[in-house]
Structures are given as structure tokens and as C-alpha cells.
Length: 482
Length: 127
Image 1 (cartoon, rainbow over the protein chains, first blue to last red):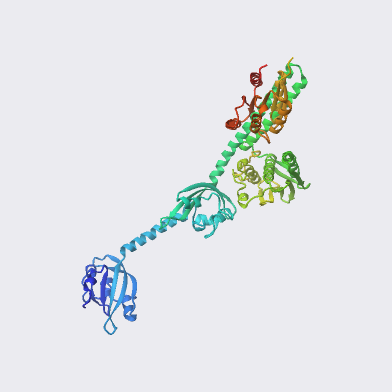
Image 2: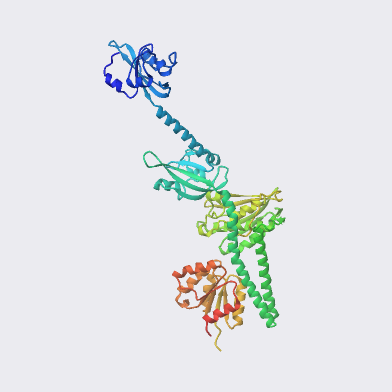
């Protein structure tokens, strides 16, 4: 067959054949000849695929039928038996009457592209597996802080909320965090690291170490940010025991020096009284000695109690009596700050089996928190704190209510985390942590009901009898560390 | 006989106040006491003490604040002050305030020895 532009036909960088209606190869270019050999007298399916019959789906046949261009993807076999992937295009060749006399088939070798596609697919699958299964929470966020992808650990812990804002998912809040390290990474394109407390979908507070890293798009700018958060709750829990002991030691060191000073005073008076034969002075000095010895004894017991050398001292305890005792102890402090501190105790609130010192420390911590919440509130003219005890059947209910500043949802969720404080430099982040630990060690719970600007209620439920097998992780309770 | 020199003892711990006042009164000094910074300023106005012992960790007005008030008031600036505290960190806090106020005249860490207290007082208040 004689073709115009034969030179270009020969030079085309693909396999080109012209076939008749029987799929016989009438002519072919040089590249085809080099790869598949002599075409003369042979059929397309014989040359390309070493088949005895034509293929089930044949683009040449389709073009003969409808005169349209068709394409397909095929695997063909060269003379040297190597397999080649090709993309096939067919084009009708017409005579002067417009009748299709032959079809030109052009096959482009895409073997390398196919191989790269497979490698890319395998590589993507590996990275996806890594992304999905790595034991930390990973999310990818866009510039509006929407979560556009998340791994399995993230979905299982926080829920499948693609498209939602990260701060809604992690912190259940309606505004973005300040500072926001994802935002910082978008701005400077750098890695940022910080520690955070987030909340799982079942309400569990999780300490996380967060790394944010930029994902650079084709344009060369940061398109997305990947946020990787390692769960360090367990590490923090273990650290908390050591840190709490450290803080406790620091605070009792101050106390012990004061008590030793008191003992010095007492012995000074006793010695001077004995020397001067002054019984009144001896008695006064001895009273100071006894008082300070008793206080040192109590303090040492607290330390041993914290260090687990002393088992919780389970004994029957009157719920009404302990609340009255705490209320009386807190009254003066509240009065000094101009607050009203009252108690509402059901006479039949009943007894619980509990560690008296721990329960007292828990109520004092909650009451001090309530007083602070009132002290920080500048919006109301007067403030009050109410402590209650009531009968809840199998449990005793304690309640500490204030009309102070109230808590945001985020503050509520983190309130029991160690060293979390919303009071800036004034808070240690220990008081509510210890209170919650004590409630848990007694098999009980503390719930927080709060409205910003209106106030807060801590609802404590303590079972009437001690838990059969207290959780060893929470059994160490630290009274008096606020 | 000359009138007794007066020492103001500022501390929130009653046993410490009893201790210091006994030691000082036994040795010829008159004492007045205050249990917080605000009360201390009132006593200074009333009693015009010759020397002050000052605790740092106290409720409400702290010892640091009280010391600054004393040093910023012309009439009280020359009254010798001995800082007495149980926490070394308190003293560091105190020292950090030196860029604003002059250093104290003396420092004692609790527990305080009676002879040590007396020695420092005698040094700062020659008869």
C-alpha cells in the first residue's frame, strides 16, 4: 500500500500498522518491524499476541464498524518474547467515496509508565499502611483547620469526623486554640512541637505530644499540615507520682522548718522557766512543744500515706460530720475574702466507709477551688459557696457549689488533669487532680456542672462501702497537697 | 535608765511570735507583733519600732510587699529589717526584688537559734 507522507509514517515514535477488514497487516512502520518482525501475510493478532484468532474486543474492528476513533490498553509480545504495554489508537482510512478501506492502528509503548504506576501504587499502599497503623494520632488539616484525612487510631479515638474543625474534635470548643501550632506551621513552613490535653469521643482526657509538619504542594507552598500526636498519658501518670512527691516535699519542707522553729520556741520557754523556777512559763513552753510535736506527727503520717507505706485508713465516717468540719475550717478563709460559706447537710445523709483524712482533703480542695472561682469573679457583687451532703441510696452525695466565674467546656474536661490550672500563676494544677484521685480510690466519681459567668457545681458520689479491689493505679491518694 | 528599744515581730505563726518575743523581752527589748503585712504597716505607724523581723510567706500581703512598702516610705527607710523565712526560695524571690529596693539588713533561715537571733539584733541595734 502506498501512503502519502511515508517518511513521517516511518519515523513515528510508536508502532504503526495499516490493516484490512480481515485484520491483515497491509503495511507497518520501521519501529514495528524491529519489534515484531516481518508482517507480510500475517494478521494483527498473530503478530502482536501470537494468537490464532482475533481478540474478543478489537478497536480496529470497532473503527471499521462505526468509522470512529477507538482506543484500548493492551499487552503485546515482541519477537524476543518481552511483554510490552501499549495504548492503542485506531483511525479509519477512506477512499475517494468516503468508504473505509483500511484502519491505521498506532500503539504507543507505555511499559515504563506502567511500571512506575505500579511502583507508585505499591509505595502509596505502604505509606497508607504506615499512616493508618502507626501508633499515634495523625490528622491532615487544610488552611481552615478542617480535618481532611485521619488515620485509624485517630478515627477510633476521636470519631470519624472528616471535614470538621480540629478544635471541635479535639477540644469540643467552638474557637481555635491560641496559639495554634498547625496555624504556625502554615505560616512559617516549619515543624512545631507542643504538649496538649485533648478529649476523646468518650470523654477521656488524653495527654499528647503534638508535632506539626508542613506538606508542600506542587506550587511549592504549604498546602496541608500533618499533625502527629503521641499519647503520653501513661508517661504523665507515672511522672505525676514523682512530681507530686517533689511538690509535696517542697511544701512540707517549709512547714517542717516552721514547726522546728516552734519547737525551738517551746524548749526555750521550758528551759528558761525551769531555770527561773517559773511553772507558768514551763507550762506555756510545754504546750508549744506538744502542739508542734503533734503537728509534725500528723505531717509525717501524711507523707507516709502518700508514699504508700501506710494503707488507707478505712473506717466508718459520718458524711454530715465531715462536711460540717470542712465548712467550719473554710469559713474564716471565705469570710476574709468577703464570701458567704454555708453548709446544707441532710441529717440522715448517713455513714460511709472511707479514709477520713483523704475525704477531708478532697472536700477542702473542692472548697478552695470554689473560693478561688468566686475570688476571680469581678462581675457579681456578692459570692457564696455551699457545701452539701445528702443520702443517695448506695452512695453518699457531696456537693460543692459556687457562683464564681464558671468553666468553659475545655476547662471542665481538663479540670482533673495533673498540673492543669486555669488560674495562671495562682494555680498549682494539683488540687482537683488530687480530689479526683481520692474519689476514684474510694470507687466514687466527681462530675462537674458549670456555666461560664454563673458558677460551678462539683457533684461527688462516694459508695457507702469500700471498693472490693481498688484500682492500684489510683489507690495512692495524697491528702493535703493543694 | 534609757527607754527600751522596740522590735516589731511580723509572722503569721503564733508559736514563732511567742518564741521571738520571749527571747527579745528576756534580753531587755520591748516587742510588738503583727500577723500579716497589712497589720505590720499599722504597727509601724503606731509603735515606731527600732528594728523589724519579717516573715516572707504570710497570708494576704506578703513579706516582700511589706518590705517594699517599708523601704519606699521616707520615715521608715532606715529601720533595720531582718528577714526570717523557712523557704530558701522565698529568700531568692526577695533577692530578685533588689533591683527595686535595697537589700535587707539581715537574714535568718528557720529554724532560728535564740543566740543567733539575739546576736544579729545586738549587732544591728547597738546599746
